[in-house]
Image 1 (tube, rainbow, N blue to C red):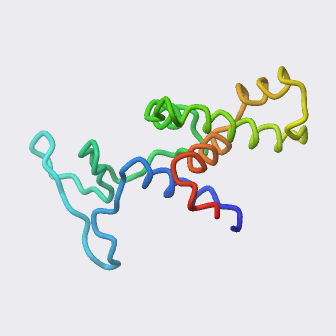
Image 2 (cartoon, rainbow, N blue to C red):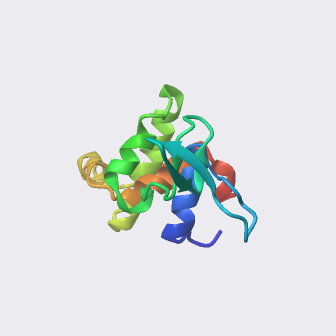
Length: 130
């Protein structure tokens, strides 16, 4: 699989989090919702939380946005997420998996939002990487 762009990564993580386009067909108007008596357009709807938004969270560039998906990782997924994050972070640092544990853990704690997104998708949507 070719490396994902930040835009593709953003959409993939958002979809894994339950976000869907309100109108995926081109040329159709966005739905509107009433908030405080004012009609506001929205493009994205979260099927789990029923939130509506014009923009998706910027997962690949925001650690704050990543904190949102990290809260959803189940206890069974935590080990896989940590391992994938160690792999992403240590690979990016040029260390490989044979590095000292302290070095690898440092890479995890300083991992970028993009690395966290990739580890999250490898954990929750492994079929994307086959």
